Image 1 (cartoon, rainbow, N blue to C red):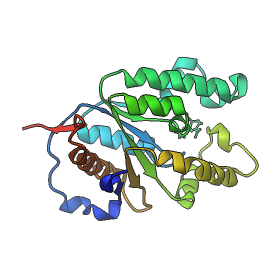
Image 2: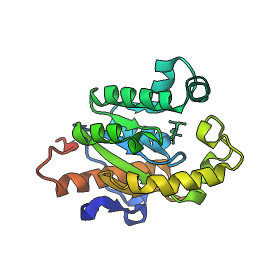
Image 3: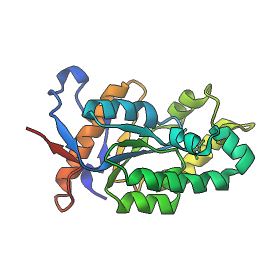
Image 4: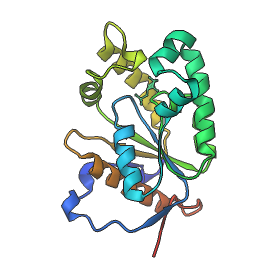
Length: 211
Ligand code: S3P
């Protein structure tokens, strides 16, 4: 673990005070990990837009590959089949051109997928959030089979307890805060990636500043 790994959005000045963003070339895929409701998709879209690179949402990819919705995959094929598909889809996406990739909440928990992310040309970023914040974001949004239970908040809390130590293996951690906009979070991630690149000169940088 390195010092720059923990970046708090409150350490980054508000948008109005930020210097204009330099133009970058993205050389490694930025893989967003974290629990349901962390903002992987919403922040990921803003991040890709700020960097002018493609954005891919894993959940959309597996739905397209399976030809059915995520709840249907869970109910007709079962969670093990979903996880198998998840491994294969992420492995394929990691071979594609550098982009912002929002994973599903369980992807980084699978050792095979985690190893593929670590071994490939990618940088992993955990968007960490409190249970209260996650719950507020997912409570009225159906479509997440793991939360289709009698006590979804409890399930989310149990997942948080089990998964947070594993998400902590990501290259970078950023904290999601209630009053931070998606654009500001995206900018926080860019600054965190730049700091991570600078702290790891032995690795090719994810973001190369362009003249
Ligand atoms: C899951 C998270 C979901 C989706 C599936 C399983 C998980 O993605 O992949 O319902 O295991 O946490 P989001 O994190 O995008 O909601």
